[in-house]
Length: 170
Image 1 (spheres, one colour):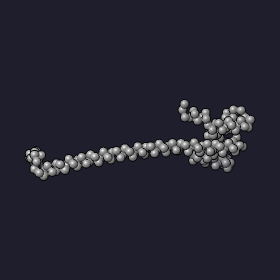
Image 2: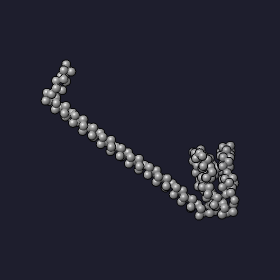
Image 3: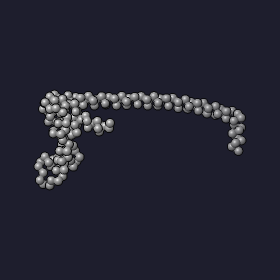
Image 4: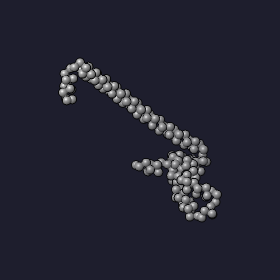
């Protein structure tokens, strides 16, 4: 499944709260199918969209204070007005909110630790590769210096290499 589909089935659309959390709180409040109830009656996505269109259609001089504030946030593409991580259903049961926040922090920490481990492995691999490359280049450089020294000594001693080089220079 696509990530969007998984999110749609496992998190509330507006507040991005975990489905299991919503279900648990709703069940404790005597509401069956709490996720659907929350998405349909508490934070219906089309209600938010309708509100945005309502603000766009309403004359700016007729805005209430909150409407003006929200319209400004919308124009700035600022989502502070949307209750992300919040729900009245949950606010009545503070225990679950605390657990959800801790769960999200734990998940985020695990993900960061995994990414850091991956980065450490890549750094180690790069370090090993650079060390191997450095050794290889040092070995080649030593071999070339030895060959150069041998050529220089042959040239200085008047060896056959020296004679053939003079012939090819002419």
